Image (tube, rainbow, N blue to C red):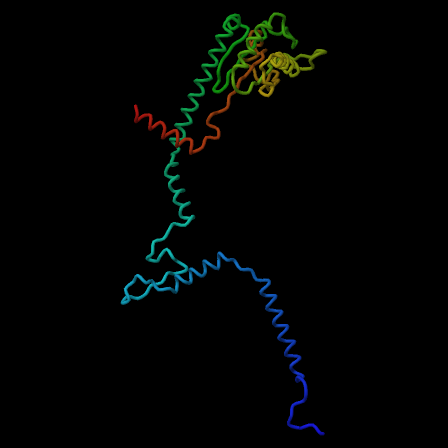
Length: 294
């Protein structure tokens, strides 16, 4: 029996296979897109709420008035009450602190001067105590004590301490060194032990120059102090200056004897270093409160 010319051929048409392949590829493509996509639930919720506020109608308004929406971009300009953002809160607190920290240069200098005066007074009181403990030795001309700003200088003269041209302590000077060491240990600050000589050159088997003699005497004094209990080695700094820092001109035997010395310099830190505006503001406010109470 011959096939009917009007009937379609048996089976699926040829183009359907290509179409099925295309649909399969499209489905795979969208599945991959969906697998790559990530959704932030918090952001989606905010977007949904913003869209609701923007396009929703405020039911509290009378129907005869035009419904008003809230802008997504500038919600602070809406008639609704808004809460301050974290940025606004930070700005507000910064401005409040700035009003408290309004300190002029004159106030800063005045506070520094008061702190320095108080520190200098404390150092002078400490020097008076050292002078009292060394009163006998000062009277005999063995040592002297003076202050220079934030420094206390205990000056050991060559008389009675070192023989000429050597860095060995004389016998009998140990009790004086005991008192000096005790006074230094009771103080605060860095301790510089500096040796000084006159301008007459020296060249011996032990000391090739005044530099070695000055440094040797400073080391002898520092070594004596370090052997005593209570001496902090981290405070001690040893220096040798030879004849570079004379007290007086080296023009006579008496003046040269004054220049031959070992100085123990106790240096305290400047209390105004690292002073902040906040500290000054607090001090000024505290002083003002004290004045009002008085």
